[in-house]
Length: 199
Ligand SMILES: Cc1ncc(C[n+]2csc(CCOP(=O)(O)OP(=O)(O)O)c2C)c(N)n1
Image (cartoon, rainbow, N blue to C red; front, side, top):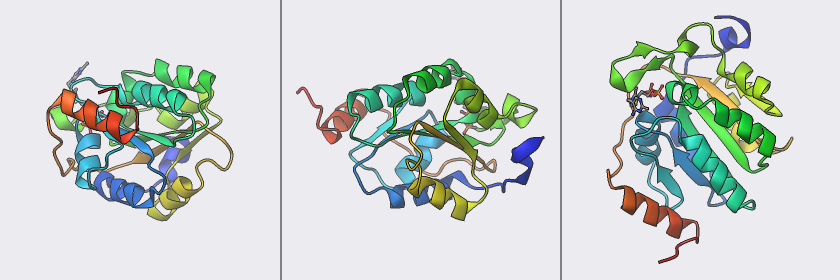
């Protein structure tokens, strides 16, 4: 591993997700990616503004982009695993070019596809997700150095404008909770939570 990545602590997704949710104060929309990102999001306590992506890797960021563009006054946060993010790298370029000032992306980088058996991902090798985001044109992309740094990054994420990408090196622990595997229910609750229900 080279560069800034070598100086960051290995953190825990469950603990960081809890810290994130505790710091939300403005009905922010939070879009959880497939698997562990979702499991820890619901473990931190279900919120009406949470969306849990099921089945498809890499869709937290595209969905969050759509929400951020549709509701520019609302803070929007995407939580995605490194393996899933690697499947949808083009969305970083799209987001950087569309410049939604209200969007934050958090990448949980364990360097493995944890949930399917811990196979290595590219970010477990030489690939640096923060460098990729900067190359895509993100005005701000940073490694989380430790828990206290995470809190500061979350609290001040929009000081220099968005979009922002934060990446944390995390351990190989699985997520703790389980969301309902019911896409229509997840969608309906999310739309209501955002005041966008058409029903
Ligand atoms: C297109 C696609 N390929 C493969 C899978 C199977 N799959 C589901 S989750 C997952 C791993 C996700 O890895 P990552 O995003 O890094 O999260 P982690 O499990 O490490 O927390 C895989 C391979 C899938 N759901 N969709």
